[in-house]
Image (cartoon, rainbow, N blue to C red; front, side, top):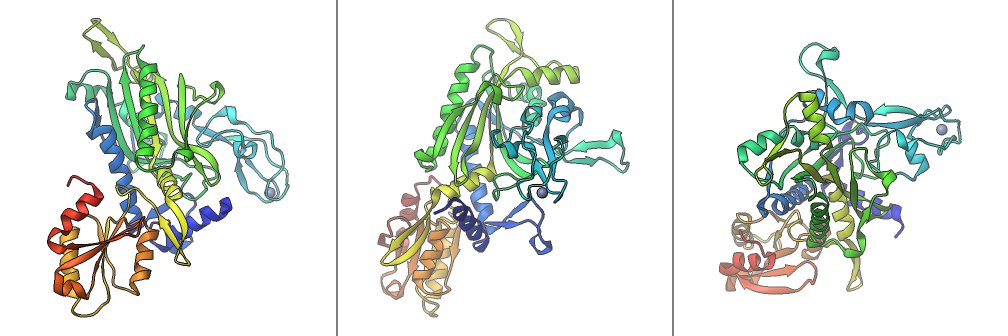
Length: 451
Ligand SMILES: [Zn+2]
């Protein structure tokens, strides 16, 4: 499979099966914005739930929060985004196309922003025309708060969720009465007016982040940094990502963001090459010090052991839901031969699969409808499920396979006599007969969930 065909096949599958649509498609769409359809929103929610469970619910040193998208604009002065969150941009004087200068160089990883990434390429990759000098272009979306549109009312859609955590550090510390190390997790939308969004949902203008700010005592930061790199790497493998497709890379000193002491990236082997899934940065005390300076508030922690006020260091594991969505799909997608026929199968981890159980009456025969409906009623109290009675049973299995449904339950004419149904597994295609009375337990055992 060529790289292009893999992404094209995924885009087509996502559209055909209702995972991802182009935003406002009936009006021709809008670049860098995507909508998640009925199956897509399930997969996306499952990714977020798996993350929240691992980093908040199952830990004793983490709490969650949910900050507003629009914040006091001084936040972005303090964070440096107003001054430095910009990409160099060049225009073609002939065809008028606009490019990210660092894309033309190709040496700078996606997501890197700033003056360092200036371009050396001087001709248009599309038409060979002459390019303008690079100009800096701030990536924050601007808006106005209230009825007057002037400088005083200018606000921004947040380009990252992280700052919403830093500005709440003192609130969370006081209200939870927790000691360091203490982490705060947040999932939420962020916005970047990327010059050239692309590669499907890999680089969007509106996207969703899952970020952790993990506050530690200075001096313990390097050890906690290693901890989080391991934790996060293992999370991907635990959700079934193939080891050969995931790697950890330590950034070179010249690749580090201005606030970072050290950064690791967890990278995935996308069809277009190794690219960042998650960045794990040691941001030191940069952010808390900046916010203390700009707000005039003390953002410190009283360390009872030493009897001193300290400014914590921060380890930041930061990932994008949309990008993970794409990686999990790429990783799970497979084509195989079954009895001379091609089968497309999405080998998604059962926790991620949009639909856990499909309920399939053998046909639309009137005698099969009541027991099939009854079975669906039992199943959908526990799991996301789907009832499908259109076309042959073989085609319905294929339809479930290609969206990753781990289990299908089939109701046939024997069901009318033996009060039993057939469970069919996606990967092995093995089938077992179980009584309807024991169906929920049997499904629970196979899905290995605790609800
Ligand atoms: Zn051109």
